[in-house]
Amino acid sequence: MDNVNLTDNFLIAMPSLEDPYFSNALVYVCEHNENGALGIIVNRPIDMNLAGLFDKIDIKLEQPTLADLPVYFGGPVQLDRGFVLHRPLGQWQSTLAVSGEIGLTSSRDILASVGAHAQPAEILVTLGYAGWDAGQLEEELAQNSWLTVPAQPGILFDLPPEERLPAAMQKLGISFSQLSDVAGHA
Image (cartoon, rainbow, N blue to C red; front, side):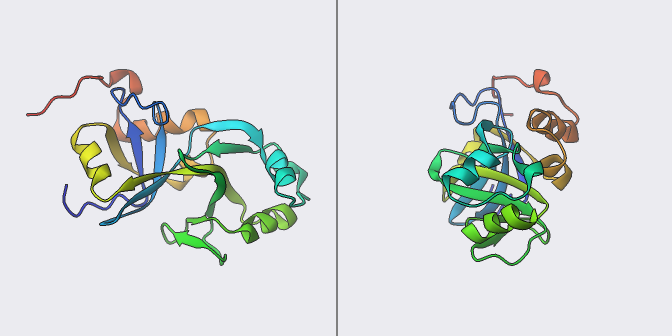
């Protein structure tokens, strides 16, 4: 597991992962290096939409077509903070470039742009994120807590949340029902 970099990959929670935050989760890894990892759960909409979020943070949502977009539970860290996963990358005050086309932004300027101009066009808004300390994700991978698969923007931005996990699993050629909750090592 040394020197593995899972940035721009999906983590698929194995059935044996009983942590309620991550059970049946699909996580998009936004950063993974020797200091740890940061990801966003992309298949857990919460009981809030963009209209409700924008109302709470006092940003005018002038794009009625976006009002019903769901806000997601991004993970158990900093639940009071918003994160916007988006394509294209763009120029924002606080953006982590995940790939050449996808960014994760935590600054208010991107929400103002979404509210006024519906840009960037492809977004996924979360409250919170998932974080791992140095070596923690590698340890969880060694314990068979996660499957990994290269991410596809189409899964993130084109599919409804309930179809994202099955679509990521399909890339591996398996379905969730085929996974065992018992780990084994050869």
